[in-house]
Length: 210
Image 1 (cartoon, one colour):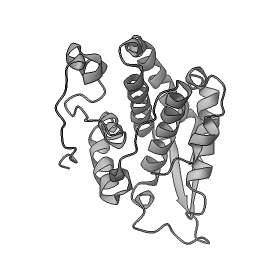
Image 2: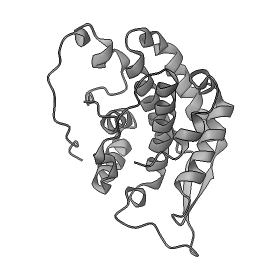
Image 3: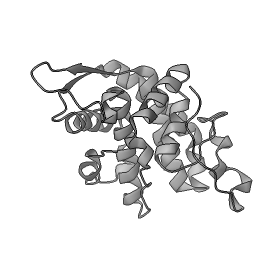
């Protein structure tokens, strides 16, 4: 998966706190679109009111759950980014436009299947990766499935059923085993439960049935 914003946003001082400000989200969100859509034949329009709505809902959930960072800071960063992805998908602040004078992106590129969802995910993963690196932690390994167009078809269909499913798909992109029953409920995440201290069996990641 392409994360062209990651290196740029990594230069932001105190990113873990700056990412809680709407002005930072607006600036970096639009910059990510410039980078992701460059040379793809796609242009974008951003509804600032819808983006602000998504941010406000995300900030409310973030503030209600940020105490869980003390249990597993690495997973909390990924969870918080997944919540942002959920709210972006629900608010739909992005509209993509195909430029007639430019050749279209190849059908084999995942961006061609769901450009908005791909751009949202690229943004959230770039921010999460940069924050983890700022913390001196390891950034999540981007799974190869994120380069499979079929993954984005499934993601789009499941997110249309419930935006909360975006948290589970984001976990998959980050190499985590998602909780499909309640993917956006913090206390149901393995990393925030008492049994998290115990060895966990490996599970094979599978796309849900659409």
